[in-house]
Image (cartoon, rainbow, N blue to C red; front, top):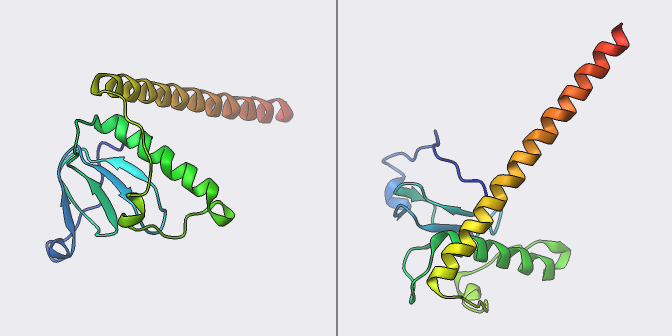
Length: 145
């Protein structure tokens, strides 16, 4: 899950009353369009009403852990859906999701583990792209010689 630290997309003052405010650190999930995309807000922001905002929980939850759990749950649900795509989902349908939650300290450790793993994967993907570009450039230069 790649988090974007900055965005140039802003919401107009006119659109704010038609939107919902999400506090910094909230876990967001898209419910329409690209259903199941998950993000953690880096600052307070107005979002579209078709985005589910997780801000308050019945028990102590680590937001990073929760973001990974809910993302995985949407992946599992998409596998079960016809054609591998969730067409739509309601907030009510989300209440039917069964989830097991470890204690808070374990959540923090698991969330950090997956964040570090994602970072490592991203680094390897960048390195592979650079290697591929370098091979292509070297191949191109060899052909000209």
